[in-house]
Length: 248
Length: 266
Image 1 (cartoon, chains in turn blue, orange):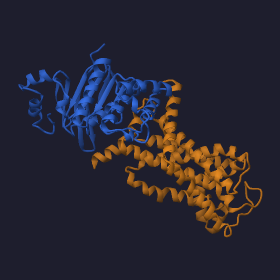
Image 2: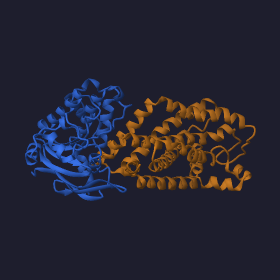
Image 3: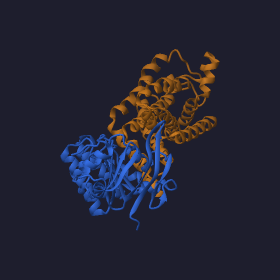
Image 4: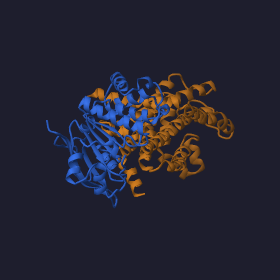
C-alpha cells in the first residue's frame, strides 16, 4: 500500500483577481497526523474547500491513491470526514438527530447511524448528551460532536480546519490529543490545519503554507536542522518573517 | 451506490425538515393564521361585493369563502416554498449547507429530496387549514380531500422549485425582503386565488393575461378542480411543465462557490 494517501499537485485557486493558492503541491502520509500550518489568510480554508469538492478545481489536481478525484469526486467524499472551521451543526436539533442526519446523507440507515453514533459518542465522552439540543452544548462539546459526526461513516481521512479555534487552552489540548489518539488507535490519516504552533509536534509530517504557497514540507525536526533553527517557532520566524503564526 | 442509500438520504432530509417543523411552532401557527384571516375576515367583508356565479368545477352557486379556499391552500404552499428558499440561504450563510454538500450522493438527488421533503411538510399544514376551514363551514366533497393530494403535492413541488431557484440567486440573507415584494405578492395577487379569471377580464384585459402567464394561477386551478374530484388538463400540463422547468433551473443554477466568491471579492 502506498505511503501517500492523497497527493496535491500544482493546485492553484483564485477569487477573481486575488490568488488564494499558487501551485501548491504536497502529499498526505497515510495513517499519520499531518499538520498544515499557516497564518490566517494563508489559503488553508480554500485548500479544504477544494479537497472537499465545495469548490471546483481551477488548476492542478488532487490524487486519491494515484487517481484524480476529478474523475470520481464522490469516491473521495465517501472516504473523507471533515470538521470545518465554522461550525456546521444544526443548533436546533439534538446531538443524535445531527448524527442521524449526517449518516443518512452518507447512505446509512437510521439504525446504523444510531449504533455508530452510540459508539462514537461514548468514545468522545458525549454519550450522556445525546438527547440534548446542540444549542445547549459548550464549544468544546460541539467540536467533539463534529468529530463524532465526521467519523460516523468510517472515513479513511479526517480533515480538520482550525478545529480548536475559539476554544480555551484546556479544550484545545483535549481536542488535539483526542485526534492524535484516533490516528494512533484506528490508523486514521489526519490533516490538521492550524495557525497555532503549540498544536504541532516535531515528529509530525508538516506543510507550511504562507500566502498561498508552500514554504516548507517534511517532518518538523529535520526541517529545523535543514534551516539551522533550534525549534519550530524559530523555523517559522525565519521562513515567514513572523507573519501571523502564533507560538505557544 | 445502492438504491437503499438513496432512500436513506431522502429519509434523512425528510426527517430533518420534520424535526425543524416540529420545533418551529410559531412558523406553523403563522402559516395557519395567515390564510384563516383571509378566510374569516377578508372573505366575510368581500362576500357581498364579489358575487361568484356558477362556474367549473362548482355545480351551484358558492360562497366567496368556498371560492378562495383552494387559493388559500396554495398560499400556504407559496409561503412554505419561499420559506424553504430563505432556509437555504440561511444554511449557506451559516455554513450548515456544507453538511449537505459533503454527501457523496449526487447533488441533484439531494436537492430533489429537499424539494420533496418541503412539499410533504407543507401538505401537513394545508390539511390543518382544511380541517379548520371545515369547522368554519367551508366544506368540499369528502372524496375531494383525497383527490386533491396529488395536486397539492405538485403545487408544493412547483413553489419549492421556484424557492430553490431563487435561493441560488440570492447572495445574502438581507436580500430576502425583496422576494416578498417581487415574488410572493405578485404571484399571489396576479392569479385566480382571490378572484375568478373572468372577473379579472371584466376589470382589465392586461391583468387577465398577466394571470394567465402566472404558473401559480394554473396551480390554484389544478387544486380547485382536484378538490371537487375533477381534472383540469391544461392546469395540470402547465403546472407540471413549470415544475420541471424550475426544478431543472434550480439544480443547474445551484453553485456553492458563488457566495464564497462574492464574499472574497468583498
